[in-house]
Length: 163
Image 1 (cartoon, rainbow, N blue to C red):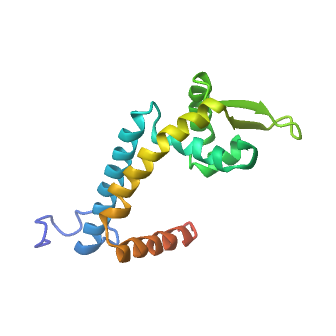
Image 2: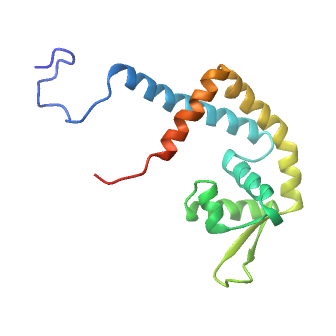
C-alpha cells in the first residue's frame, strides 16, 4: 500500500507523474492563464466584443489591406475553421468584418476589417492594453517576465510527436 495516498499499490493509474513542485507550477499556470483570459474578456465585453473577436480585429488590422484568407486567419487566432466561421458570421452581422471571395482562388474566402470594426478596435485597444499591463506585464518582475517569454518560446519550439 502506498503510504502517501492510502491507495493500494497497483490501484492507481500508472503514469510518469509530476513531482509536487512541478504539479504546483502546472496548476498555477492553468489557474493563472484562465483568470487572465477571464479578466481580459471581461474588460473587452464593456466594448461589446470578446477576447476571440478582439484577436480577429487585431490580426485583420495588422495585415496589409486589412484582409486575410479565412484559413490563414483561423491559424493566426488559434481557432478551428468551423469556430472561426461562426465568429466571423456574428461579427459580420454587426458590420465589424465582411467576407469576400478571393479573386485568384474561387474557393477561397477573405475576412476583411470594416471601418466600423476598425473604430471599435481603436476604442477597445487602450483599455485592453492597460488590462494586459495591469494583470500580466506588471504582475511580475522584469526578470520573471523575460523568463516567462523564454519558457513559452521553449514550449512553442517543442515538436509534437506521437508516442
